[in-house]
Length: 340
Ligand code: 2NL
Image 1: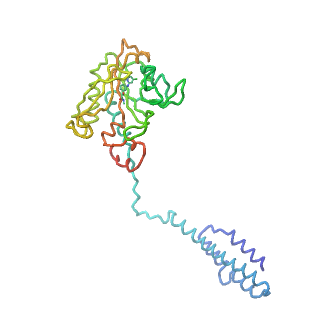
Image 2 (image 1 turned 45 degrees about the vertical axis):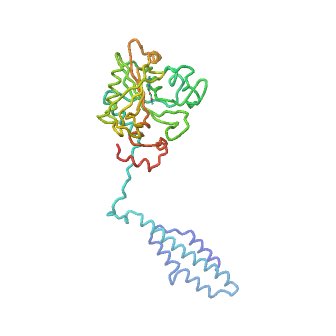
C-alpha cells in the first residue's frame, strides 16, 4: 500500500492543469466520494496495526498535497483571468500620459538657432575632444597664454596635446579650413573648463558662437546683427551697448550688454542696479586667424561672437545655481513644461 500512495504522490506532484476546467476534473478524481483518496482510506482500515503509523502519515501527506495542488491551480487561473483581455474594463478612463518638458538649455539653444537661421545662419557641430591647433594655436593664442594651462583646461594627453575643447571655436576653425567665404554659421555645443564647481561656475557648460566671413563685412554689420538678435531674444524694446574687451582671436573685441530683461533698465538685483546685463563677447576676426585657415585676410573680413547658454537661461528663468542644469531633478525640469 505504501508503494501505491508513493505512486499517487508522484502523480500529484507532476500534475499541471492546462485549462481551468481541468482543476475540477483533478479534484473529482482524487477527492470525490468514490475518488482515489476515499479508496485509499478504505484500504487503510484493513492493514495490519504495525503498518498504520507510517502508512497513515504518508496518506495524510498525499491529502495535503492534493489540496495544495487544487488551491494553487485555482489561484493561477484566477490571476491570469483578471489580466486577460476578456476582463478588461473598456469603459474605464485611460491613465493620463505625463508629457515631459524640454530641458531649459535646449529651449534657449533652439531659440538662438531659430533667430539666427532667419538671417541666413546655418548650424555646424563637431567633436568635443580637440587638438592644440584647433582649440588654441589657430585661434591666435600665444604659446604662453594662461588658458593653455592645466589649471584651466582638461587635458587628455600631453605632447602632442589632446584636450576637451574649452570653447566651440575649434568648430569654426574646422569650417574655415574646409570652405571659403561667404561663411555664415552658428556653433552650439558643450564645452569644458577645469573649474571648481559652484553655484556660478561649472566644469561643463554650453556655448553658441557665431561667425560671418565675407568681403566687406564691417563692425557696423556686427552691431546690427547683434541688435537684431537681442531684440528677438529679449524683446523689441531691448537696447544694446558694446564695451571694449580683449580676446586673442578678435581685434577689436567687445562685450555686449543688453538692457536688463528683468527691470527694463530701471535697476534691480539681476543687473546690480546698473540697468545692463552682459550677455556675450564679440569682435572682428583677427586677420591671423583667417590666414591660419587659408582664408586671405587681404580680401575677407569677418565678425564672430560667443555666448554661454547657461548664462542666458539663468537670466531668462531667474535660475540662481548653475548646478541645477546638470542634476536632472524632475522637480526642476517639470517647471519648463510648455515653455517651448
Ligand atoms: C564669450 C566670447 C567669443 C569668439 C567668441 C571666435 C571664433 C573664431 C574667430 C574669432 Cl574661429 N572669434 N569666437 C569671438 C569673440 C567672443 O566668445 O564670452 N563667450 C562665452
